Length: 347
Image (cartoon, rainbow, N blue to C red; front, side, top):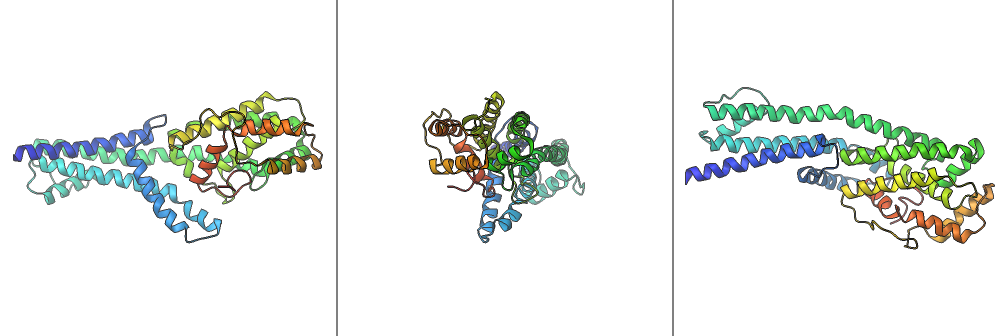
């Protein structure tokens, strides 16, 4: 009976350690979207605490200041959770291999995990576990240290275009502001280069924000900027250009829209956000006809040539918007994005 109990405890401890290593692989090493239940539960628990903190403040700048540390704190809590589970798992295995009592097993496990060396193994099985636990602790800490430069490099690259969009489309960025500034400064001949640039940005966003999902919660250096708001502003701009502006058709705008809604959908898939994967032309969107007409009139009044058939232009715009309407709003809510027209200003 004692042997069966120790065997069971050993297997449970081993399973805990394997679960931690598998979680680390899915979270940091796997070069594709991988869901770890441990990572998910840690981030949900920390998010609940941050949600309670932000409810105390009505001003968005105060809530943004609190949420700015959510991702870094969650990463540290994740590594701490991995170490705690590993500590408990190896403690169980030490006890199962013949350690005198749980207190001794705890001290031996703690000494091994942090390579402190104040407790010594007394037999071969314990020696093997000591080296295994020391390796596990070093790997977990090294993974966090090693991947922080990767995370911040991807963050910096993402924010470059987000900041440039503020120059071109205002704060918060919006499609009408973007077109007015281009019309006044560059002329619409420069729009093609912008669609190319943002198509690449969406492709990189797709890769980085699914393989390193924590990047979705890294906030921009300024409270009124956000990667999801920038994405929505560019998608709406490309949709308006493709549907409503009276100018030669630019296939690059269509490609930018497709790259954008595919990237947002893939990120939504990771976070298990429901949406219709095959929306049809005519499906409802959260932009009303009155809101569209207000933008149409604003651009027309500014002197920007608009298509004469307003009804057809509206239907074409809605046909593009339906591809990303749901996921755009859901990701804006998930990341607590700043209020921006047509993106995070509606339920």
